[in-house]
Image 1 (spheres, one colour):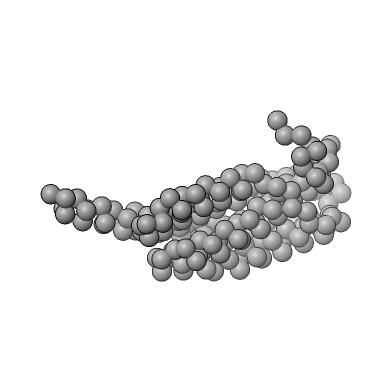
Image 2 (cartoon, rainbow, N blue to C red):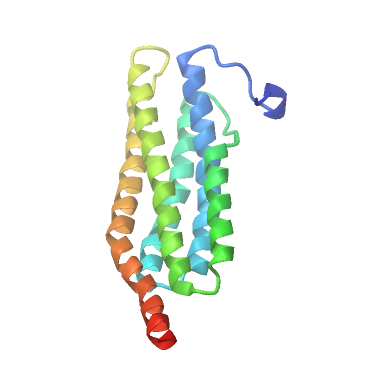
Length: 189
């Protein structure tokens, strides 16, 4: 079980607004981790179409980080990276997979696309939930509620667009990854 003492800077959550701020800070951590991961993915991948999906999402992720900072400012809070264990775990698994498949660039590319897709799905779920909570805070202490929702919706739309592009590319990457296996089977006969 996680102890609060293991999470410096975190305090007990006793209100919906504190929950929301906590989750914005964990998303802030996740987006920073994902930014670093995307830069690594872009460097590791060989497929030009995959690079073409990752490359424009890097500045979008930088904007997501800025949007989260802006949301925290609206609440009078400073950005604080509260460790997002799910993000850290996804990135760790992606790095492990990349090392294990390093001898086959087509498998690396397929794996990077799959891991990136998993990351996007996590972000989509988180942003949808954050939007619902932000909307429920309407009329409470949240003066910039409309702006908060707009910033979260902007992040959500970009994550959904990137996920859609990755999903469309996935079957092509699967087919490309199968090609070396077919050649190896023919040679072994």
